[in-house]
Image 1 (cartoon, helix red, strand yellow):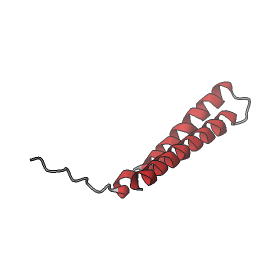
Image 2 (image 1 turned 90 degrees about the vertical axis):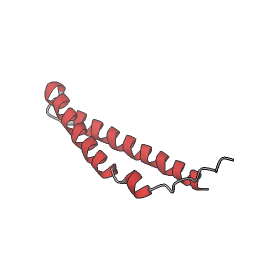
Image 3 (image 1 turned 45 degrees about the vertical axis):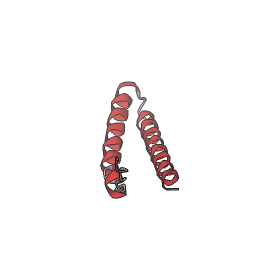
Image 4 (image 1 turned 180 degrees about the horizontal axis):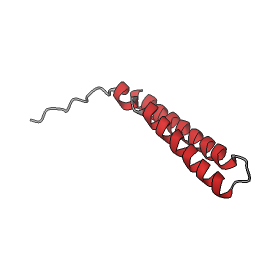
Length: 76
């Protein structure tokens, strides 16, 4: 007779521990790409840098929100 598999308790600290580093890398790359685009096609303003940075932040926090909602529904 087979034994039922025990589910390991999820380690939430481990799951979300890399988020700070991911956010820092994302922000660095966004600013770097934005500055490259501004220097190539900009008119003295940093529209590309600000636009890409805002897009990256909104996308990051939206993804985080979806992950947290999924975890919350999995616990119930």
